[in-house]
Image 1 (spheres, rainbow, N blue to C red):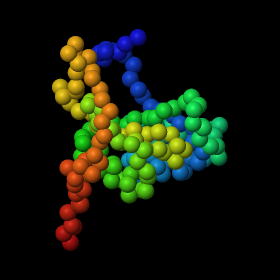
Image 2 (image 1 turned 60 degrees about the vertical axis):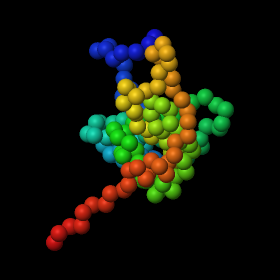
Image 3 (image 1 turned 120 degrees about the horizontal axis):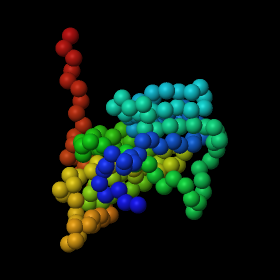
Image 4 (image 1 turned 30 degrees about the vertical axis):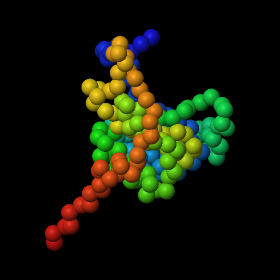
Length: 172
């Protein structure tokens, strides 16, 4: 089954729901570090976070995982979630938040179609933060098919190209 074009019957990703060991720790990561807003909480067992007023992009629960440990390497499961930002400057701003929180960067890549940063959440789930390039700029093979790549992404250059802005001082 291919989804080359979006039609009224094409699926789209609605949200990701993760089992976590510590709900408050996970909420802090997804809200304070990644910028999602807590939209609803079900006591100490579940929470939902969204962006842009959407009811939720991320569900978190401890129903079968409170105090649990990450799956060991070599097992099946989630590879990573991926969150797309509107602009390269937005990605740089989020990178600053990640670095300020002391979160290690697992990797960073230029995929030709996008620029991506890879980190891990507190439960060691992979998280990709990325920005798409304009589809007109995507690399293509002679037959028109995508020619994605994995080349290094210079994080210092990303940050330098989009310097942090501070709010104007208030006039009292």
